[in-house]
Length: 332
Image (cartoon, rainbow, N blue to C red; front, side, top):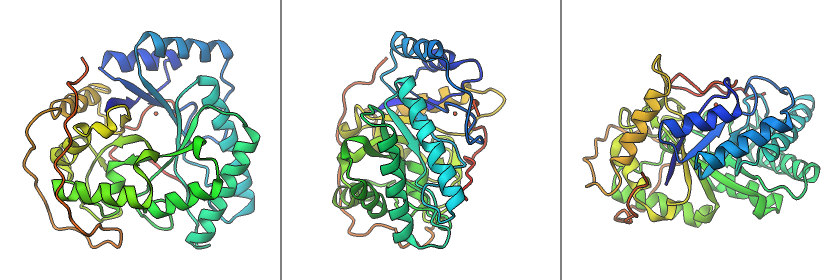
């Protein structure tokens, strides 16, 4: 896996790339503007070119922009939906200018209109965006949800339905957040649980659609539907859950971005989490510490034992990244 993190751009776009390299990242995720703004200042062409050059010079192998928190592409309120669609087109245009590989966004919430209606609205929103930005090279990645409230995307089936309805497979994919998976009821800490996760992923969505990961431990128990990030190995998932992902050859060229909590030491916490993940590469499987699960309809069944696949030897986000154990979200 191409391990990296979400870094801030307060010091400039290019500086985010340099900072990523300093802490040992192979990949980088950023916001292109404040996530609490509908629209941000235009990105100067020179700044975009400097960012692209920095990414190449720093040897980063994958990049992504994370969409802001205000847009809801699945909501039933016409005024908010129109504003959300405009914000998404703007964000997609900015991502194209920066030359990143992916634009990661939250599918949104149906807010009482029903899952089927919400998914249909989301698909229509994406169709409009692709029509407004044709022939784009940035892949738009739907992020799975923890299953809180009326948010969409906590099941692989909802993600697949939305992608299929758009009819643009070459421009769409999925970013899987490990904390959200766990909160939605997928317990992948054991080899059996990880095997079941892959079975469900392949049969309901398709493994090839997974183009990025958010690597976050979880403060809340499995099936809690609570989106509470924790540092790697310090939460309910523990090191065992991440051992599967970093040692699975299927994800060798897929970026995994940290969104774990920071403190007054700033990116030093990211560096620690990166070291914890890399220490798992090729290492013996660590003990699994399990706690009582919260019942969840999304919880997998049909356990199957699958040993983690071996991998090759390891290689030697507002403009500020999230600092709390929870990523802020607003949907309207």
